[in-house]
Length: 424
Image: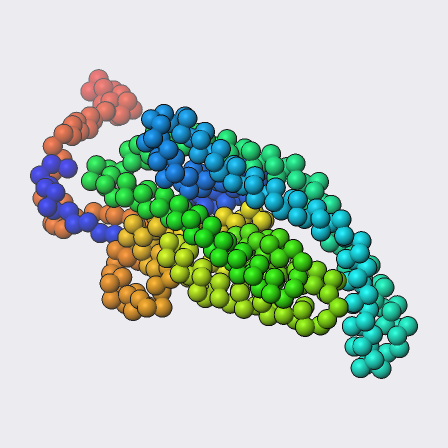
């Protein structure tokens, strides 16, 4: 419309239900695709995570040899030799334990019968009734773990295939990391490219720090568990100690699972009551120290996720991708928190996920108490309102064609009548 200047319009924002619906629909589609295609996305996600974790080491090796492909191969071989050595150690030691499996099960059954007979006597049950009840329950209790083990072995080929696929993805992500990085930075405006590059570096640092922190935690837990089991007098202390340390990769759950096996072994192979009780006390103490001192100080400084957010992410990860979701939940949530911290409307959510939530709870009503920090601002739609509506009354269209006057068409009957009258 001619005659109107930009100053005659005032921008106005309003909440758009349409934008919210689009976001929710896209989110549901993405989650559905990730869930249905887990067989494809799980190794791909592990490949991305491994690439982030191994990038610092790969950069150092590449600086020495000057060839990226050679540096990636050397990095993967070093990591592979380390993991292979760990698994070889456990395979040899666990084989020795498995060779005694029959004696362990029989000893565990005898010890459990003795304990149940004592408990049954307290409730007035005879030894025969207690034994019959135990035989039914013990058979189910022993059969279930072996069925789980059998199913796990049958799926081991699938797990190994996914592992090698993840390694293949890792190789290519490390090889083309410069191209992927430039592609991501190129998606930002020129004014935001510096912040985008900084965000990518922070995500990479979180992944590498998480790896180094978890390795340190495993070593500390392995030493503590092994020394404690050796002092108690349990056989194979290194096996049980470092097995529990490796299971610590599953937060809040792995340490408990790692303590269950040496407890059963202690019940089956020792003739005293204090040794199994000491195993329970040992792992309870180590888990308390690990959860409140070791992990928060070593891993927590890099991940910076509070306990509530971690537990919720673990539950969601287990329900979404099973065991792989448990392992990936914490590092992925840490990366998502870093990304949210660089988006203004999502900064309050990043604070809700961080371990600084308790100390900075007032920030929501001070620094973040502004319209640009509200989640609803993501779904606002900008309109332009005419500030001078009187202009619409005075302005006339300039490029319109004038309508012609209406042509008067005489009525044929009238015309005929006139001619007849004139003839008379």
